[in-house]
Image (cartoon, rainbow, N blue to C red; front, side, top):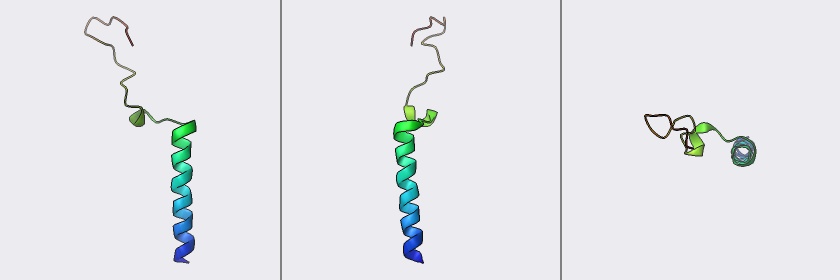
Length: 46
């Protein structure tokens, strides 16, 4: 019983890792501030 639960948890962690690595990248993992401008004059540089 415990072995089945551990296998399921490891499988879910692995699938979650693959999904976040290749398919869906959450905003908190990207490390960039994509929604902010570069200065106070809103020059539009990215």
